Amino acid sequence: MDIKHTDTGNKGRFYYEVDGVEKGLMTYSHAGADKIIIDHTEVDPSLKGQGIGYRLVEASVNYAREQQIKILPLCPFAAAVFKKRTEYSDVLF
Image (cartoon, one colour):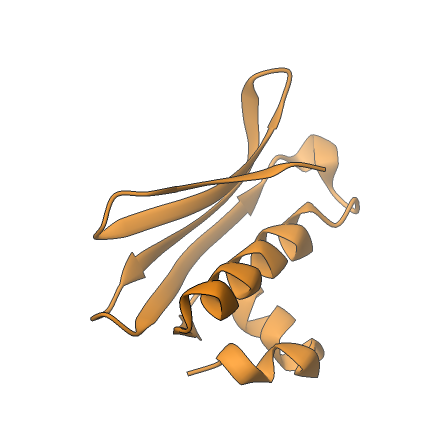
């Protein structure tokens, strides 16, 4: 599964495509140089139960570790994932 990432400097997104059509999306905003705020996660209902949302959060965690930044998950889904996955606590703001 290939999760893609774009970042404009102020905002960014992790997304998943099927045949060139975006089917999963997680958006974030930069809050200074050391933090991002996850504000939205959405997965197409046709992919429900396949773990796409978890993979989007996992991609953000990997990004945060690479960039040595923290994540503030305001999105209810992302916040729930951070509560379940204690191994992500190192990047939690």
